[in-house]
Image (tube, rainbow, N blue to C red):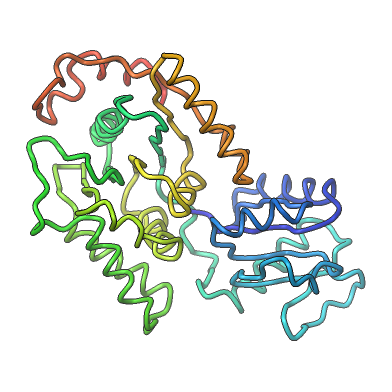
Length: 342
């Protein structure tokens, strides 16, 4: 999972050209977003953890905009970079490669999550998020079948955020660990914070082993024990949760069944390589889909629509009622997954 770099500049063309260079470099540790308007930046900052904020010098004194990034760097108009009380500085008018080197150098010194040349760079091969605004669109079953298909080739993880979805052949057992337990565990390490961020990621990964159900190459993490628990999985906890999944090299494939929306869900959408959106081909289903697109756009994350694929999942008679894992790919749903490149 790449970290987030936000560029706040009044010169949108300059910012977009810089972001294009940054995002085109596979060895750069950050996914870059550009904001030339204050409202869009404020909206983004409310739902995302920003690791590095690169800001125009003239905007640094604005009290109306958030500065809650791990590292704040301002663009200097002079070529001698100096350290300020509240931030570091980088000379604005230099080659993008030079700016990238300076960002990495400052982040290694200042960032709470240390970056080294040997740090894993999205070791997970594929991250899919199945996220449907339409109830009853077969989304959770499709997500589980997709994870099961991935597990035929390598270690895979299925995670359901739907508190009402139950894995085949199971019922919710308060004694079995799930996302609620994992969220609580991460919370104990954050308040008070006694461990470094790298250690929190390591411990989260170890604790996840106690929470998942293992079936060969497939691991399954059940949804919250109660629907109110999803509110506790805030942006900070989700940050460490995703780091422990995507950047440890433990899983090759990850499928999220994101049944609940919110700030933490937005982080999943940003991390995912692809967002698969099941919907019903009815007037109401199409209306709900348009509303979902509008709200994504309104959140300041319109780029997410570029990696979104809308799906009408075929109904599989073999999965009606109780079914086993071995049934997931036998019928219509299995053929649908095989015929499409997910």
